[in-house]
Length: 271
Image (tube, rainbow, N blue to C red; front, side):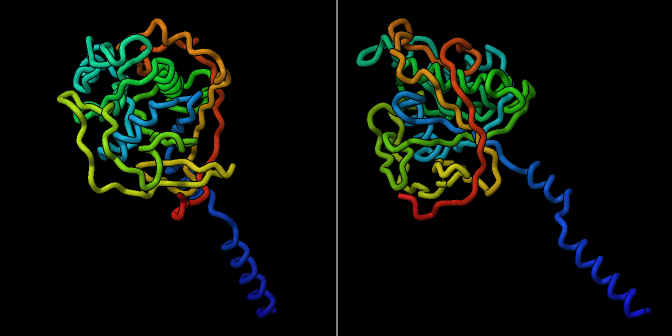
């Protein structure tokens, strides 16, 4: 009888140890980083990705940020610190009409207070789309309802990139030589000699993304894709010089869909 009871006890112990720990699973979910993924193809976020990747990869400014719901005056100060204030270089030849000054890190995040931001003159439509995605992510509007920051600051997130083959600064092993359109407030941005070639990951869907600050298996990924990518960019004809980030954009600028995914592995041999 004692042997039978001992057998039952051991069996119950083995069964209990095989069950997943709910607390452990909850901890993994809580620790998962949120990645906001920009589609860098020409009819999506376009060359704003060049500036973001140059800043993150070539200037080592990072890609993990904290939205702090800044006031208009704070955002203006950050824009000027990045060289994107009133009368910036993007309002003049060879740019001017149809272009805006894109700063990185964004004026909507706390990390912009550190200075050393880079700026790039980009097509106004691309800059507006970037700002629209950020704003809806911060305020959990539209397709980001139930996701994003839910209007609560401080909110930490990371930016990542997909469909970046046409954006040289996002590619693995790419040169960080300035293409003459990467500036700081004081002048042309200098080249970073040592560039990290890691940061490429596969999603559950099979898509490859570039996450400059790295990622972990299980991290949540939000991919925004504009549904009217073939529309003519008439917005460019009226925009000139300014910078477009988060709170400055028109909610009706463009409609986009958000697809949620997770990171399943790092791709070390990605080319």
